[in-house]
Image 1 (cartoon, rainbow, N blue to C red):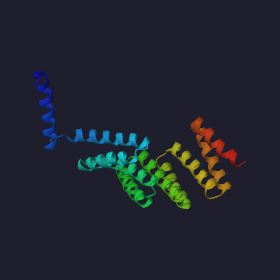
Image 2: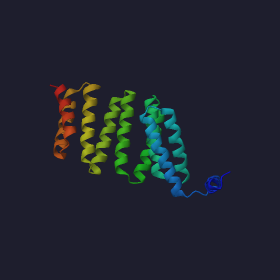
Image 3: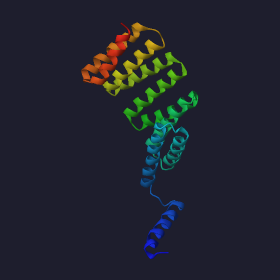
Image 4: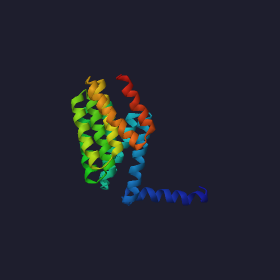
Amino acid sequence: MNDSKRPKTALFVALLLMLSNGCVTNAAKMRWAERLYVEGQHLLSKGKDEAAVRKFEKSLKMSKEIDFSAGVAHNLNELSIHHTRHGKYSEARSLLTRALEIYRDEGMAPEVSKAMNNMALIYIQEGRFTAAIDQYNSLLLWDRKTENQLGIAITKNNMGLVYERYLMQPAEARRNYLEALALFKELEKGNYIQIVEKNLERLN
């Protein structure tokens, strides 16, 4: 073997020994868990669900080993999305409920908001539209408590869509769209304003 390759080989063997003996620091494991999570998200966006799930499960396992709570919750959330896509709604809700508990315990308000929205989406996919509205109302309470005005506006628009498309209640749909529109204008969110205005046009 060329002598110039020996130091690299020796280093590689030393790293393998460190890994096998559990000598990797928690910080390194956290970075590894985060990388696996990001790789899983990328695979999921490409429609490679099974490969993504394997990444999330590895990241989840490592996050649990080092008590990386946020990592645990993030992976549970992604796995919940996977189960929702495949019609496993009970499993999806169970995973997401655990993620929500962690997000609340860790004081991660934006993640709580996103996860609560995902819970509403599970109900919509399941065809439980009244339950989805109830979930959105709970989300509104949370976003008001955390002063998430953008979140309130988005939820109001989403509620309008449920009332319009699934519950066939145009008056309620209009009311929610108008409340969303007023907030988006206050926040100067041009793209959102256009979306809600198109929603309102359908009701005319």
